[in-house]
Amino acid sequence: MSFDLTREPLEDAAGRAADLFVEIYRGLEDRRVDPGVDRDELRRLFRHTLTEEGIGLLPTLSEFRDRILPNSMGTPHPLYLGLVNSSPLPAAALADLLVSCLNNNGGAVHQSPAISAAEQEVVRVFTRLFGLDPSWSGMVLPGGTFATLQGLALARARHFPDWQARGPAALDGRPVLYTSQAAHFSVTRSGVTVGIGDDGVVALSGTGRGSLDTAALEDRIERDRSQGSRPFAVVATAGTTGTGAIDPLSDIADLCHRHGLWFHVDACYGGAAVLLDELRPRLAGIERADSIAVDPHKWFFIPIAAALFLTRHAELECRTFAAGDTSYIPQHGEADAFRRGIPTSRRSSGLGIWMGLRAHGLSAVRDAVRRNIELTRLLERLLAEEGFEVLPGGELSIACARWEVAEGDPDEIDRLQTRIAEDVVRSGLAWFSTARHADRNWLRFNLVNLYTRERHIRRLSGLVAETARRLAGGPV
Image (cartoon, rainbow, N blue to C red; front, side, top):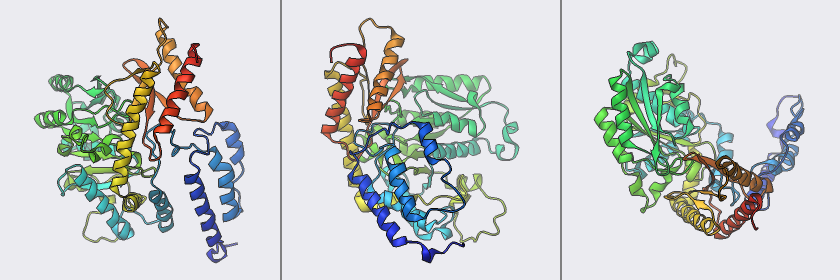
């Protein structure tokens, strides 16, 4: 039977979907954080569910409630302190439904006229937040990895213009990119993807929580040049995902200027610090970057995936990503996104950012960011009172702590941290991970949540302390 929209129970299905939306948001604390379900059992649950004939809208929504919802990670739960995945603003979540209904291709303005205009407003607002010149260009991409990759593709095009035609054969020395050992792994992945290889990505040791050491960076650049390599870019981080370190952006901007290098800033996580007067000075120098990546789907509370790429080099974008034969695509005198970035077809995720901020305002995000930081510092104090070693120097919403055992084997103490995290996660009461820093394992708590309050943090501190004592064999 051919598909007939008039026969679909749209009104009832929309009502059921609205009920699920309310159930998810109103019941955030009623479900486990980690569902604790066996993966093989889940695969069996979904096996043979896709057949020639569908079961209909309403039964499928019922199966969502029975099969998907109880077996999903409770990312918006107040005690999810995990992998920089945020609790989305309700309006932004609703926008995802509307984006899918319209199905406008954000790759071209004429294919998504209203949503493209909304995205341009998003770019304008973020340009203002970071103190950038209004001439900067920007677009929404599906994740920070894509934004860093696009920045490095532009850096390669600027420094090695013959690469576009001849590839690596155009160079008389190895291209080299610099970053810190604490930088996100996507930096190395992006470097490999643009063709410079693992050996072309130099990850330098850091100071404190992992901030890039500019003196060591300059020494390495000069040494590499003297040996015939071709340094071309530095990726600095404003908020590392492991420990929340902020690289000295202004000093790195000076260094890049002296050496003629592309300066890319990964502000995917920590970029929201620009909202706070007390933290904005820590991002000084970001306005001197050549390109910036920031993920609204992290600390601006937008659903995954919505990364924002910004660059001061609009003309270079058009030269680098110029398309081939596109005679079938109407032209309207402006550079569409598909002509100045990696994606051709592009989900119109800018609408989610616009709707989230339009409905709830920047002030809601600002207040949540400040509260997340305050609660993270509270968690550090509570854990220290319980006897944990706490990693000092925290500025953003990441706390790292260790339960030490007197005269214990270092490797066993590292394994203890993992066991503590796994035990709490299995309980379904909270979710956090561990991170490697300074050759030791640390419990890592990352708060990017609209709904976490002091009572949740006090509950978490007690739970983690009780678990640590029990697993270490001490008094509970």
